[in-house]
Image (cartoon, rainbow over all chains, first blue to last red):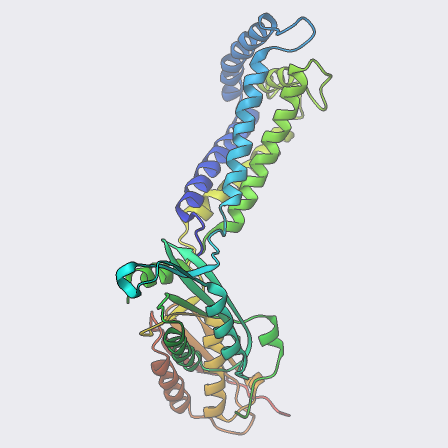
Length: 206
Length: 191
């Protein structure tokens, strides 16, 4: 529920995959098939010759290289920037504002803004859920998803705890929180298992 | 169920491909940074670090001469496999081992491991065996319950099946898996 660009991830991965596969297959073909090797040498040889002539003609000053390399450097810099942007967009979308509303004259006579921090909901939920002995770990985070603040509750129950009971009781807790806070934010409950729940004993008495 | 909830549940049951994307981005960025370094050294008229870009282009154009014939094959295969991994990650659906539990207020996803451990507990209580004798495997559309009876004690397969199915009905998982109980032919002793 974070704003990881999933479509872009898949598109860029597919693009890179195809490019890598083409380069790899080309290398193998050039090395293994004599006809392909001849074609490659006939094709690439004149191109590199042109490039060599061009760079020899376009020195910036007598003791430096051609500006063609500057163009190459700028293009590669752009590639690096795109890659860094791609990485920076993974797992984004955390927010610390749950709800915001501006008061108006005809509402209750007071102009201004009310901002509800998502820490309110996070801490209320976390405190309420941590009291339960069948949950080993609870973490609550807020995300800004499609312009709406959403809560993500991740709980790790003990072994053998029925997930639908956990879901129902967390649902009831969330409804109590709705009444407390006065805002209904979308909530995702993710019930999982971690190393701690795998290695601690199942609860036999409740 | 609201639209946002539906989208959230859909996203939660698929892999985001974030890790492999970061790996791919770092790989490409490192290659580009190296090229950037050599190109800038060339622009500034400095000696190259490993290879001058023009020399590199000439060597590439002369392939497969000037190099052991096995080298380009090995490197080419490696690059091809890396590309195949990227493409496969882009194309394969990447469903996570999770199920959805319907709830009026909260969007609930539960890892299959949790479902399996809850079903194992129920099967263990129904069969009257210890924890080590029950193994439950949960996949998207099936639940396989393997019970190893205690030697000398007859187990009722239908009873275990009914108990597990009862628990599954209470969970109301989406998609609903089918239960298969399998009793081992050999029992265990000393439990």
